[in-house]
Image 1 (cartoon, rainbow, N blue to C red):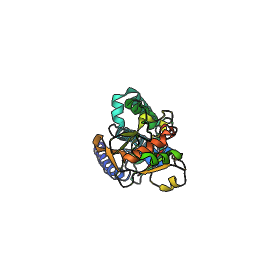
Image 2 (cartoon, one colour; image 1 turned 90 degrees about the vertical axis):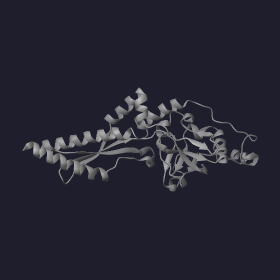
Image 3 (tube, one colour; image 1 turned 135 degrees about the horizontal axis):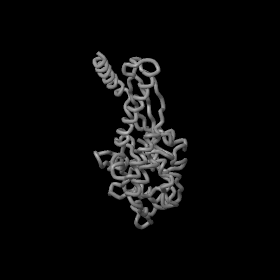
Image 4 (cartoon, rainbow, N blue to C red; image 1 turned 90 degrees about the horizontal axis):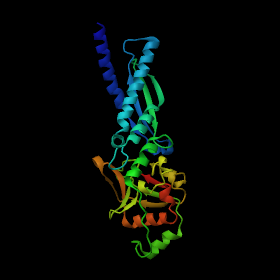
Length: 286
């Protein structure tokens, strides 16, 4: 009889779990700036226990389920157009250890009991800052990309010509804003900016590793953040419109393509003092 009861409870938990999962999909909150995080839910059952023991078992099983879900979901997050966190975990022992430590220390952001007697827990992991996913994966992908020199332009080799060159040269830009709205852009820790000729304009290889843990770009959906100067691009950014987006692994469309002319403008704006690239003072509207 007890086995039958347990089997029935297990079936009910599975049914509830399906409904629960549909309402609580795991997510990556890229648009929250430095407060960005990964959130997953776990679901647990008290089985046939009641009172304190049932509560303890239900809560613990919800947390354990959350940890399993967090581990699986984190591995699917794209680092760049070609690599997921799972790819880095499989190939880099340092990343494997770092991600494992992060998951073990994941915060229980909220928890509770459902009307049917099951328990739930929401686990949260920071995207940016010290002891975050960015802190683990961006240095690894930057090392794989290798260091390179930013292209230097002058009046003769710039496609925008002497007048355009001098126009950019006269201004000081506090950052870069790329408008990629409506292009189907996905988010990643280390996107690359190309121009339509295939030139590599910006990516992880150009970022100061000391600031990489905040992400090499900032994603926003609300233009008010930019208009008020509250984004990392500051109050006097160079603003360009993306032409299209491109992908790599699993057609993950995370890289941004600008025109050749805007590619020159971006390089020239950075060439003034290297500030924009070194500090990742780049905002992407999506």
